[in-house]
Image (cartoon, rainbow, N blue to C red; front, side):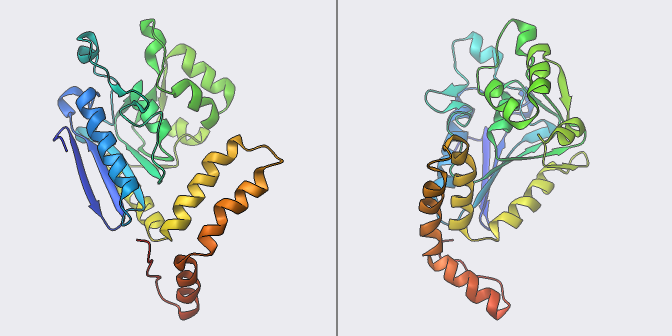
Length: 254
């Protein structure tokens, strides 16, 4: 794992930190490769339930490294998207912990996450139109699914910045924290998720994500198919036993 991306794994949580503070955590191909590797490890390890992605030095991510782009280097991975995440988010839940600026690809990375915890001073934005460009990393697809259509259109076309407090009002941000506390806030949320049954967490995310494309005719059959393995699992039995015995569950799948 490159020192451009720092990782730690503990208590069911993977923490992934983009570590280029001198470049406001702008993403080049090396960063994208390292983040993709960390996300793959999150999904592959049975002891991990949820991930948190953040940036070092008080900035989440300033988007693509424009100097690298000018030199012909991509900030994404074919088939995986910007930062190795935007086209192929992990199967397990991923929380963005946002401090400072999340601009361009940085906003697109946050939008690819399942939840966002942000400092009140954080700012999001898709400023590509100001440079004659277009937000091609999923921002234009995901933003109108996260906030009202007309508001998403305004920010997409003007390139204006969206403050975290306004983002919270619109539903883009799950929780607000004081400046410097976004990671702590995201970790508190991650710990709450990681305490739950790993199979249930993964399957629940899958249903929430996939059901957006289910027709009314197939929804219940697909819902039952996704739920059945969880109900039949050792985790389900342990959850019931732990509740009856008034103790914390010990998950076999974690």
